[in-house]
Image 1: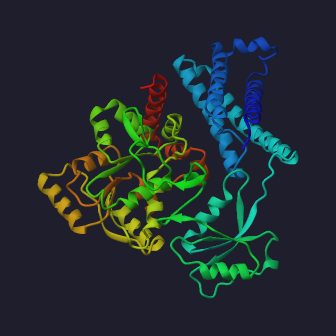
Image 2 (image 1 turned 30 degrees about the horizontal axis):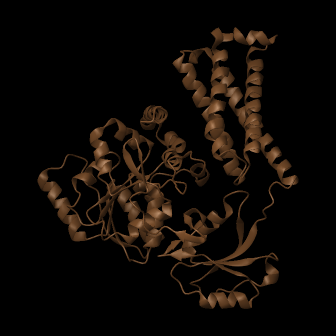
Image 3 (image 1 turned 90 degrees about the vertical axis):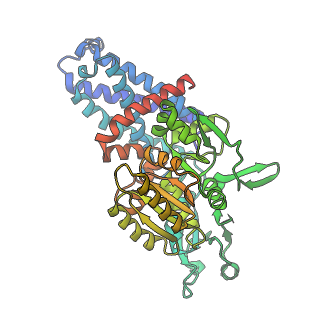
Length: 497
């Protein structure tokens, strides 16, 4: 991670590239006019003066938000670093556009200039960042070396563990070989066939690894075993200090909540959230859990009735990076975005031994059919009690009673509700203590897990640009929502609502 001084230098370099690209674009577009510096102030009724002013404002906001909060650097793989450049320049463009529209000068800036400027600035910025990163590496700034491991685990965990080991600042480690713990014929690679400092990493929740430990030790390898509590992995993100001891939160105290626009969010990591629901699934029967993002949180701020629905949930998790940031600023340091689809995946993995049963309520017949096939393929041990797509209409009291009876006869521990916000939250609140099982409102989680809607690539999720990917998927529906709610969220945050 870069220190604050290096992050400040990086932002200055980004700003210099940004304005250099603007100068290049202006010269290409107005080379017959721009003969001296002052000419820029008379081009297109002063639109570019406001554009430059807005750019300066966006750079200042970037400094306040990213640089001051350790989120501005050169870490991650090359795709993540490229994504950071795209994110920064998109932010510059968004702020500048809003500024110009507010001053009715958006039509005074040439679209040709924008089309030239942004590709040039993005390419130049990425190249210079990579050169700066290479310089820091040569001077010894990045000193950590990737640790090679032989991964011993089940096949279903291979991709996820490999990905999590390789992400982060310059990669933490890499997998040089994989051994399937369920394959009786699998053998540990000989030491001469792997790098000299290779060790064995055992990721085996709930498994007895005594024989594996002895086998690897006899082969001359150091053995590192991942730690689990109640089947949930323990990692640096969910370890807390208690004096000289390292501890894991296994129960969320009621004080671990912070209000954002009147909505009481639980301040926790994703694994904390999964563990808490799994451990209390019987006690939560008849209750409901919400995952609230920027859109639904702003909706709750404007609609007292919907806010009351969210406040009636036993847990409200922050399904959005801006909300997680608000919780951190409220004094809760160990907080992550808890997205519904990610929560589902972790819960499926944790309960794939059949210890917790599931029911899927919502979406369409086509999506549920695809979801059923995916569940059987990806989580063969998962206990699923049923799938049901309710009619897309206002239900009569008799129809609603039949649905309640159907759900109660299924007797599932978790009822995943995919009706979309705010409908699903209102439905869960209306059926509180009427149905057996804890209701979890996960919206588009059904589509993502069924594969009917593609989710943003992992690098876009890591740099908090998943919303942009979804905007490109459905611009007609989401542009107005994002534009209005994001502005309201920023305004309400500024006013301290």
